[in-house]
Amino acid sequence: MRTPVPADSARGVAAGFGAYALWGLFPILFDAMLPAGPWEILANRILWTLVLCAAILAVLRDWSWIAPLRRRPRLIAGVTAAALLIATNWVVYVAAVTSGHTSDAALGYFLNPIVTVALGVVLLRERLRPLQWAAVAVGVVAGGYLTFAAGVFPTTALALAASFALYGLVKKKVGDTLPALHGLTLETAILAPAAAVILVVVAFTPAGLTFGDGVGHTGLLAFSGVATAVPLLLFAAAARRIPLVTVGLIQFVTPIMQLLCAVLILDEHLPPERWIGFAIVWVALALLATDSVLRAWWNRPSSPRA
Image (cartoon, rainbow, N blue to C red):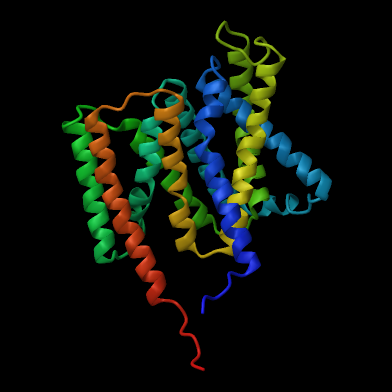
């Protein structure tokens, strides 16, 4: 007899799909923000996310966690590193989308799990299982193919994969001491001064559009705060309710949707060499997914006999 899925687990799966689906639609949002440039979009994204987080904290009257942070310099240093990494990821991603290279961004997020595994070996001295080694090897082959056969080094894809993988590593080191809302608030607060300077400098140049391209466009830039915060909070809700292996499998929704957006909506042309490179990466991802499923199967608790 099939065991029913608990309601909390079902909500976790729904939240996970919601988060990754929203991230998958980001190319459409950022393309709609044109002709604003990536730095202007980044600055708006940071500042409006901070405004939204502050509004939620004000409604919840949840300020008591801020004062003790002064006695935790190591935590502040870790969150600062995480903030810089995620800002790097954001600006590279937006630059890829707004320059017509959304497929490069999709490739980066396909490569992210492989880079994460590789970082575990290099930085954390983790031991890999055979299928994980095979996945890393196939991922290296994919990178080599895209560089030599396709004639283009996948700089954008690797920058996105590395920055997000390092962001996850730093967050793991920092620990789960800050809930998702607190962490996002602190990260954007750390980035806010630089974002404000960027916004002022860009807004008063001929390329700046935040205050000069109509109310609708300004509203769209402001909406980037909601678009940033909502999937992150949905992801946090999912991570608390469902196993990590499930989260890992759901994450492929994002790059698949990004690739579909690139080809079907943004009308990007992918040459045959790029499709072959994607196919090699998908083999590596299939190996990682198989390893995760098998690991979860072997580690499942034994059900009591009747």
